[in-house]
Length: 366
Length: 241
Ligand SMILES: Nc1ncnc2c1ncn2[C@@H]1O[C@H](COP(=O)(O)OP(=O)(O)OP(=O)(O)O)[C@@H](O)[C@H]1O
Ligand SMILES: [Mg+2]
Image (cartoon, rainbow over all chains, first blue to last red; front, side, top):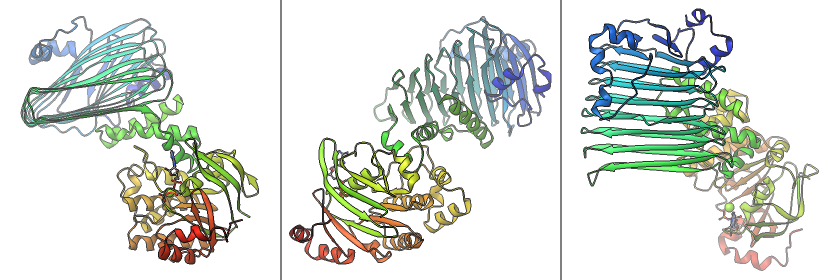
């Protein structure tokens, strides 16, 4: 149980780690990984079929690991930072169905520390798995920095439901860089939740649907506090036929700046893709900028997008007031509804957990 | 007197919509409001509830012996006013069940009433979003009955509702209004709802004024036969007090 092992974690740190979706009892998890700054503190798997370890160990002991490491960047002709320390290697064996989520925790502790990790996730043929990664910062991690590279490889018919929860603080800067490669019939659901203050986040994860019938969906819930800059997008390259992509984002600004990007690129004409971005601005200082992009060489390709950004609707507030809610209650109920956890493609267990997290964060934010 | 509206005028978007309206509703009384489209019926209800943009420029509204025109919407709700909207808001992500739970702690009651109004499946949907016209009306009635106000302001409760559902809604509404001290102001075009409740007084709103008062069924019959012209003609004889 992580709870007992991490003697150097005070109650504050435990709460923060929990607020990024980590189950410190591990009762409802099938594997765990935890890294503090550059130190990998622990990793273990409770079931067969799930391999989990530090990336360094994988590169030392697993011959194939090397051939994966960095390969998705090469495929897209992109560079990536090589000065990383730590990160996780997760491999789920062919055909395995992992009922309880795997969890990975990346924690910033020392002031001024620059955490740079490189993760590799391989989901083999027909395997089905839920992975939750929680990234968080201790109160002591002033001016912290986190860079997280993640490479996802989904083999034929694989299913990965990946949820990333960010729980940072006002002076932390963050830069996740992710690429997912999907083979035939694979499904990648990527959920992103960021509810606490942060200095700056820049991320633009990319999924490449290279196998026929592959599907990707990116869903994000973003709460933006005064002083935060969140430049968050998702990109799907629909390379093979019968591939599907969906990008859905909901952003609420309490005074910070959100840039909600989305990019759908059709390289095949038999595809279906949709992008939806909704933003709610609750403060004069807040801004939300939606930048949806759609790119296609084909004339009648099935791609669509919707974007709606605005202030909270007076009519909706007054509707609730006329049922007896105060204005403040009405506003909080509407925001809570807007940040609907249902848009994330989560299994019940995680949905409940994220719901509780959101409830707590929103309560504290109003 | 439960509600006493004295000579109120209401401007909406810079335009005088209600002019010098007076109206009284006693405890346990049901009043019916007729009137052509755009005459100001909804405006009256919204002004009584205190919606922004419907403020009362002159006159007074006394509810339960208290001047309420300066109160917020939720304060009026606390005092016992309730509204059933003609066109309710749709709120993404807010479930009908959430509001039901807020209005009523009794889970069993929520279950029973939603069952009677065929709203079981709607409980877990976003409020009014993609509800059909009739479903919206049922959901509105459902909420106002859970809220248990003393004075119900019902804006066309049966418009767009099929006959079978009007019968269900009419019966449920009547049961509620039979309870001691419950009163209502009901706006109707079709008059169907009058078959289910015992309304004592009716009046007609025309061009932002109340012109006529009498037995609701008689007024309705006359409107049905002769249209609103007749009301216009007799307004000189029967000025409402
Ligand atoms: N917010 C608004 N802005 C501009 N005009 C308004 C507004 N609200 C109401 N009005 C106008 O005020 C007048 C009265 O409207 P109201 O909704 O009260 O009519 P009504 O009697 O309820 O009609 P109906 O039978 O069609 O429901 C109409 O001409 C309407 O267009
Ligand atoms: Mg109306």
